[in-house]
Image 1 (cartoon, rainbow, N blue to C red):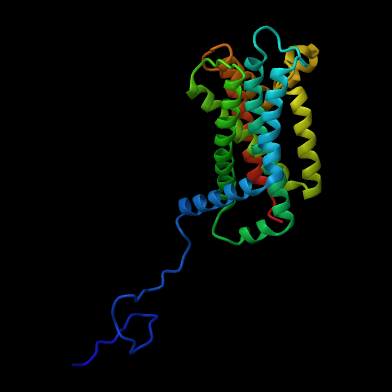
Image 2 (cartoon, rainbow, N blue to C red):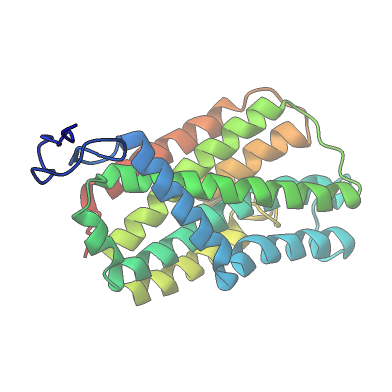
Length: 271
């Protein structure tokens, strides 16, 4: 009996036919799969970075425990944890989506990582989407940890969880866009200094641990327009006061998200 040979293109003539023979299919993977793979990689890198974990997890947790237990800041009537927990949740979002992401992406750009990604089939907006998705994964862990600590300190939240989720997602989009814009336009060292400086300034002046009504009226009118103030006030209105949908804060966060992500997509430089 004569053996059957393979005539498949790309396979040497005369090679025996049978199972295990494959025809090459060059081309990029589906876009959704590329974004998911990049998001998984970004998440692993975030979780393996000890310095970023200190900034994004340990510092907010310590602030919540310290200021809730020690009478350092006048948080008004009621339990201090009821005022502080929403603000610290907002701080956790900012530290991950803005500060941590800006610093990490800035040094990826400096060391040529983004330059190599630029020649891959993954589009620029796909990379930004993947980074934002990885931030959301880390934030889920942050929120779970901070919520557990707050409950241990006697926190009694009110309001709708869906409203809280919407605020957190919009806040993440706003800070992610601003972080990517900074990382894609400044040098890595400048990004490191600026991101940490902004973090400290907004920690004090963003309504996180110090109520905005403690500031002069002119300064308060400006601070209320910041994304950290909109996020912390919106979360506080829902979780402490049981308010409905905070449309003004949601509108402020939406404007920052559109402007930040749009500017990052327009001006981000890969090298």
